[in-house]
Image 1: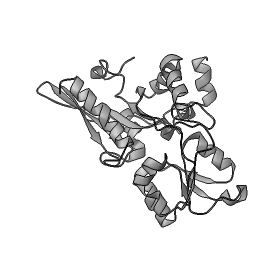
Image 2: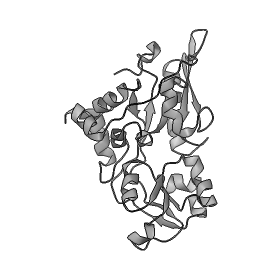
Image 3: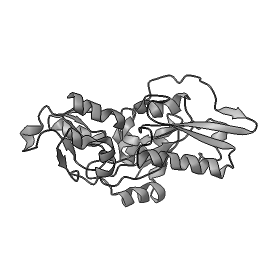
Length: 263
């Protein structure tokens, strides 16, 4: 596949904001600390652990000379601004899902999951061995960051709904939390779609701001408590969407990034 054709077709959007100069990473006595901001609640099972694990491995591999300090959602920046934090220099790394940022480029959804898209193994093979990483790099080059695969939830569930779905008519006007290109499909059916960080979904369901929500699957959804406020659960999703948390590193222009981040 021609990379430039792929990106053009996907409608890559410009950033439209000016990066601000902020404080550099903390440096003391030959050691350095990088900040990793995430979209996950503190101590979140699976995904939160998935962010901490590479942080710990990098710290260990550097012999403590490079320490990665992980911040949960909202601790340093709002959760859905974690990629922007890396772009503007507030943090050196972030951990989230690429389709959270499809407002920057719709092409990013293909590095998380799309309706009737690739399975987990297919996506891994595409990114690692069949040119997917090079396309991803080209998209992120315009923002000065580098993306890496880091975690895998497998096929998503359909979601939690307060009311039973009995047909297409029953989704008209439904307020549904679901991100990515899958959300665009729901919009075509008359659903009002919104993206929302994991830690905010339960409160929105409880308050009636949302009628339904889709996140990952039973393991993570149990921890978030969706079953307490939405009794109708649909599984699996109507596609092979695989949802991949992704690890973003520092800006490419940062010299210290080159040893572990540059291609």
